[in-house]
Length: 395
Ligand code: XIL
Image (cartoon, rainbow, N blue to C red; front, side, top):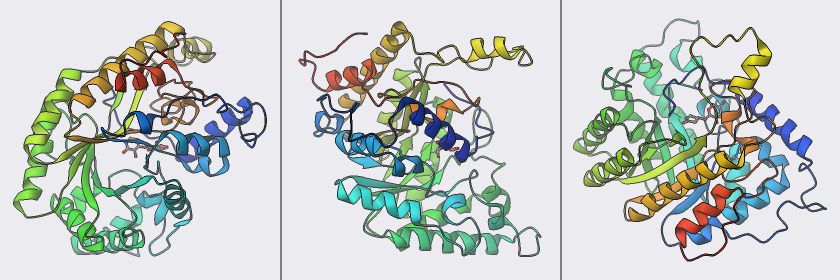
């Protein structure tokens, strides 16, 4: 389980790493020629789960130049969340200067392929440019100025895609971790505006697109301490008459994670009257930074922290597949509450976990490998939807 959250790698690093990997694997620009990694007929996740919930993926902008990944996206998924391009730093890097190009591309792509779009995200302490919180001459912004900017940002971004987005992750990661306070105190939104930024963000989003669903999204929501605080946040919005449709549990997990806690979280959120989504699912197979690891000895460091650079051992892939199967079994059981399960990335080569929390590693967290081929975890997830299915090729 991930609990430390910073620093994030730059998105360009991730993008560059992904492009290099794809170039090395020969998939860039070769989607329609031989060998086509997708020529083999495989079942589709979105069809297997059609009666249960949406199955999403989070493409980064590199996918715009990767026809093979686009083909896989359209074949397997019926929802997309932009990995970075709708975040404040990407879509309004300077005050009043919007870059909608990548978001426009993805929304059009989704419409062409009959996929739902999830907007991610409007108010967050990360990937939000400093200008939101400063005056033009560099002084700290007043509460009123920061709120005015939040309203303008949300009105412009949500308004542009009005009617084309299923739902927005309105506020991301606002709840405090562990024994800390109810809300994350070190967020610039908290420092400049205070807790009310959450209500305001939901109200502005609803005004800009009254039909869009509105979500609160966070990691570790399944942990009892954080669940309690998340529920308090939901109830506060509800008590104020604000629209909140669902809570997104990110799901950045390792192969060991507490299914029991997750089930409890689903049930408690259901009791609040909100939908639940797994919004950023991945299953890290790499070790965390060990205490005392001597990172000046690069070779040793590499082998300890990046053990599967040349490929993931079959037993690890098998364990991951079993965990994915158990997870999807639980999610199916709660299909009345769980409305979407989205993976964070498309394939292992595109996963942010190659660069977080330690840059430059080779992770194997998703259902498709670096050649976009289905892994044992893919077959396990398909079989979980249809236990009588015979196909589960073991590595
Ligand atoms: C990550 C992206 O995947 C990276 O490319 C970027 O460098 C940092 O952000 N929680 C979230 C996501 O809500 O927006 C984050 O995405 C992963 C953690």
